[in-house]
Amino acid sequence: MTGGAPSWEVFLRPRRGLAHQHVGSVRAADPDMALTRARDLYTRRGDPLSLWVVASASVHASSPDEHDAFFSNARHKPYRYPEQYPMTAEESGDA
Image (tube, rainbow, N blue to C red; front, top):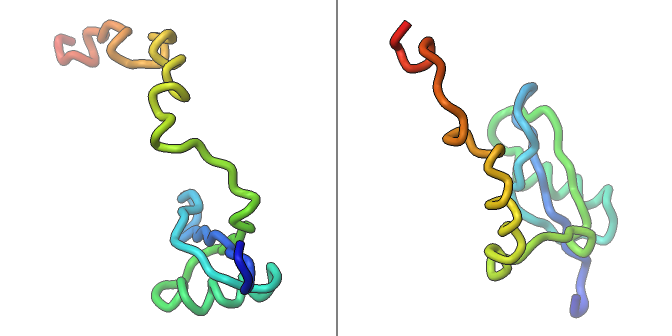
């Protein structure tokens, strides 16, 4: 970061049963100010259930450029894919 307030990633949960979703980011000096700014910016419409802020510097993610190398091991686990399992008569509509 080059000067200014740190960046915070904002996650919003619109209602029970749904997961938090990343909705954007804000800049603020501390977590309380980040929550206040996130509330003012991202909850103008609707009545969300909860709001999270996470320091951007604390988020670790894979890069889209690393997709093939990072996720390649999944191809060696065919049990993860539904097409590896035969359909039952009930599922295929033959019942």
